[in-house]
Length: 387
Image 1 (cartoon, rainbow, N blue to C red):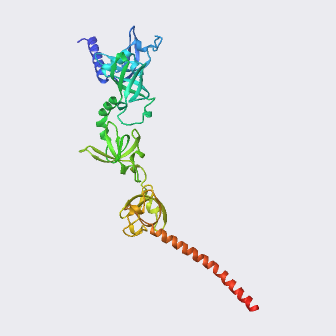
Image 2: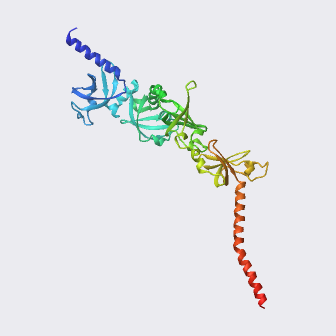
Image 3: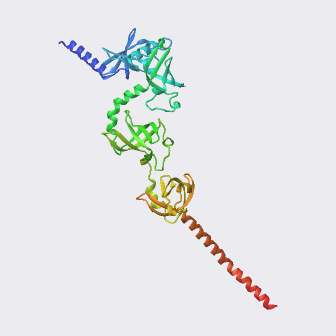
């Protein structure tokens, strides 16, 4: 093989390798090296060149917008034989013909979500209008429509009818394909103790499912959302929320991942031993009622128990009739055990303390008034003797 032939073969080999390294739909950048009558050549690196139609490099008046040496960004639309690019698809300025080609080839197109309509969203793709069903706008269900309005996304055209007058698109299929490609890599980072960003996928009565990337989801149980008792998970997180969570447990056999949110905040029990002391009076809110007594929240994350014997009600009284969830009560701290995360409280002691305070006040008043009364009696006695 002669030297020129070897160079031609090497160039062809490099071009074919370059074509294999990129995929249809990928956005790449290159430098214009030549401009012909119908197409321009773009150097995309690695001694490879790609072609782009000249019409895609002209403005609305037909004037060429670029020159040799300019850098352009375009989408790969073909890797067969040679690389072929489309700048309009990358810029979201595709013609009807190009949109139809994108539909048949499965290439993504850029579109702007104009507004929410019945059943989905109106999407503007170049000069065309398309419809995206609400289920196809995201992998996360039940997100607020306002989150998408005005956003620019990439979509795949799933229906192209009536010459482009009826176009249906999906963003979800592109996101799911991306998730599948990234799933294996994401799972490597999900280990016990890891702190990861996530996105709330759905909220249930028992907690929330959080997407950690690549379609991998973990469960954030309601008991792990906050140190205080959470009655309704939707008050803490909503679908679409971006949050940071801690991986608590990973079960690879069952493919279950347990997540925590409260672990990233300070545990209020860590300072309970310094905050609460036996004999002091506190005010709290009743959060739940058991047969053996009501639980009182003294602060978010800190609950104490009022045993039945310290509740101030008669023996065998139905606790749920004597107390109501949500009521505020005054209690006295009997003892604190931060290690066991327990505080014993008393309602009875409140009354005893009040009685003791009243007795002390009465005694103080009596002691202060006694000399005055004695002096008055002596004065009367002296006056009687003088008479």
